[in-house]
Image 1 (cartoon, one colour):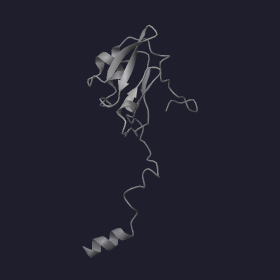
Image 2 (tube, rainbow, N blue to C red):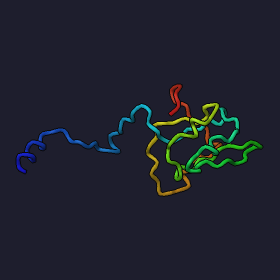
Image 3 (cartoon, helix red, strand yellow):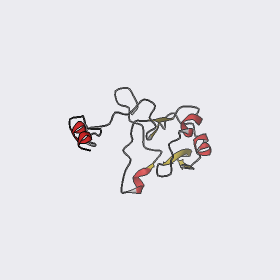
Image 4 (cartoon, one colour):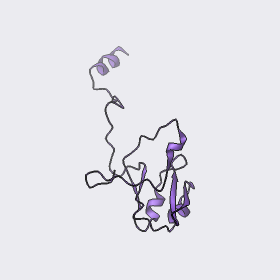
Length: 120
């Protein structure tokens, strides 16, 4: 046991100091959905294809728009695959822990933020 202790004492730690040191997110990571209301054609395919029933179509200004319930979402991205206009895309946002459940509802009027020509 002392041999293992001494050999591990001088090795680099296996953990990082999260959240002080941010984790590098790999390519293809399935984070929070990003919805672009300008691309949406209100077809409702995302809502119909969602296996977790985490997308609800709501009426806004005479058009049906998706309301995302991230507390029910299983992040399978069937909604993004079903969308004919690519209005739903994945992001690298993974910090979704909260004490307020209402923050896990993504409303249709929340527009996508484009940073440096890329979606988050």
